[in-house]
Image 1 (cartoon, helix red, strand yellow):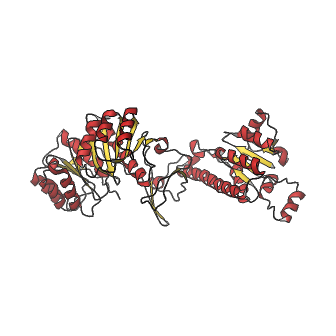
Image 2: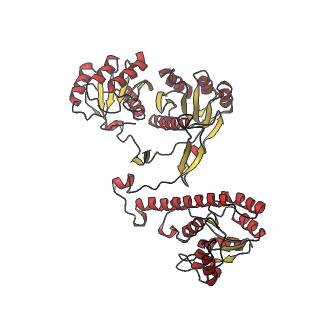
Image 3: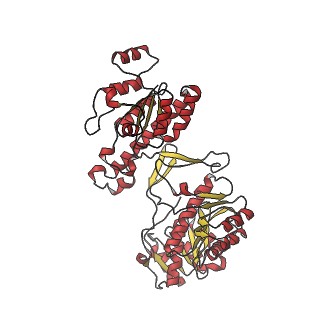
Length: 513
């Protein structure tokens, strides 16, 4: 057995090489891999010795040679291939061990590998005869198979080839992404191309198979960008059943919203309760227990089976409050005390308890249906409160601005059409996902009840008529924020003045579908 080794990630290299030598393999190595084997006193031949040609052009050309690629690509079921190889002094290679530089970590022209991907692809193409290893995690199983059977099975070679092509696809995708960002030229792409380039080459690797998809009859999984990590990869689950697709989807929405609320409030304790990706309640409080109780009181019925997100440490006091409330599917916090975990585990056996780091920025959003994809940049709240425009005779108080800001933040993360009412730092009424803005306003005021009186409301898009606003003012709302931009803006502003309330325009819409 002849094995060609050329790896960037040298994890497990020495151990693998020694195992292969023990199995009688002849090793061939290039560049830094050869140096590592030499330092470890592991017998091998340099690629230059095999090809009869020195490395040249600062290492750009070393494995691109018929004695390497002929050795990888010869079809061993075809006698003419074997005769031709023998005639040219080509000795066949049975295994390639090669992994590529993680290009996205430090991209440059000089790190665009040519020989490595070519070897990997050649070996993968000829996987009926050649095994190709592209990940140190594969080494142990292959060595075990060689020791047990004396060969790498066809099924294993097939799986290795599939992983190899995924490896080179990921590498090429990282290069394209770098070139889209300006590459070696350093010129920034256009505003459009920066978000939606001419082609997309995302490569995702499966991180987890989840309990099930949106429904139990659907298979589901969580993927991540290949070679990247997400906040989910650093989550610790302390208790509860396996996570499902919707647990992940809703917990992500809760975790992002609660951090936005915390940051808007200067780090004050924030809690969000999410159901079907929409908040049933969200609050800023004097403590996490205070914030939780306020968020829960906004809609205790909808909180059942929801996600509770705490933007900080979850101690025994808030754990007791949560345990005394409705069942939650997931509770997520930065950290949890041992007492809190034990309290919740004892009282809420099925609830998933998660500790998690800060979420990373959302970046580009991709939504697929069939063979079509819709791509857009992240929906950020770009216009600060200080740039909102008051269009009514009545000006907002500081307390109203605070509640308008909370209502606006929660509304932007609520399915359209959306109306949110906030009072005293709490989102007390949330109308989500309605075809009619009037109906959304009716749901929000119904949920808020008497707390709507003196509260502040937000609409994710403009009021096309004054009827939606009328629902809010009738319930006692005293301040409203909305994007504006309707041909009937003045009619709506006049209605606000007639009702004696504050109206702010942001100039920024936040539809969410």
